[in-house]
Length: 176
Image (cartoon, rainbow, N blue to C red; front, side, top):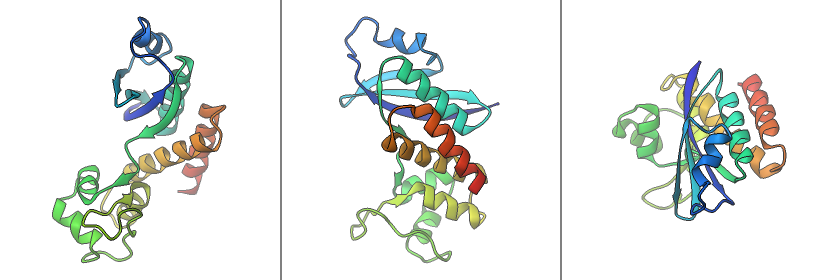
């Protein structure tokens, strides 16, 4: 089993309540750090599981069981060149060269702040490009795509979240 690290951003619980942290622990989040920042609850997991989809889906089930409403799963899907370098263990210069189309062909185009000095890319697309161009291991791509699939499942139908995430990620694995 591998340990997968991700955070679930949630709302709906009072952080001042006496049972705030114990609710998460009793629901199965004993492998997470719970904090409250900027108006949301952050449940930061280091979850052992057979696969990323099982880690995310079981964590989602546990957070819902604690009574929280899940807003999204992170790490953030939008990345800067610095983020790309850090997540893929590349030098900042290499990431910059890919982003500016100075090296490598068909690097994904930015999806936000395109005309600024600090554009943002969709991490799942970048990780796939990096994997296909032998710049990152398959696992990096699978994890990025799993987070994206989980967030898409959350947006599509918040009921039966864990089930939808498992199905979405399973379909993703079959396709990659």
